[in-house]
Image (cartoon, rainbow, N blue to C red; front, top):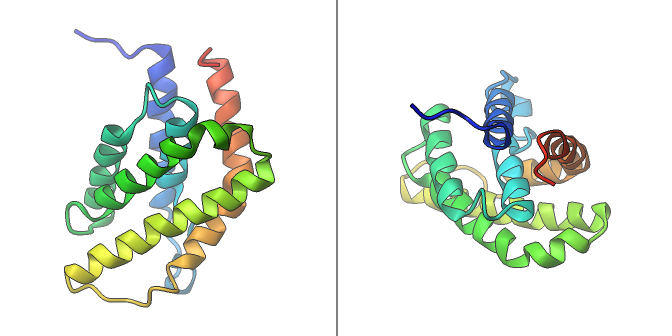
Length: 161
């Protein structure tokens, strides 16, 4: 019987929290402003710990997000895998950027993820305005400094750093 080690349990717990924040009910008007909690969490772990959370994990988490939010299977999985692959590619540079430049990069990567999701949803004939989805990328970037600080503390507590 396998046990969850402390270092992996911190990653799992952060994703449970991200999914819980994703499922927080909001009014229809505010739903487009909801940050991409799962994507931000996935991006943090992929950039700072690519040996523990890579493209495969991003695909799995995106597939689970599809199940949880009711999208056609593979929509978020595809978008998150591509976006996290880009994040891992720029990871060495990303780690040395200031938090404000990281915020800008998070906006760009979240916008890529949102636009890929928009494209994939349109293939399945679930059209909506593409520009409305960029509001979620903006709010994702704005909460990045908080998520970054929180996950760095979690990583230090569980001796990942």
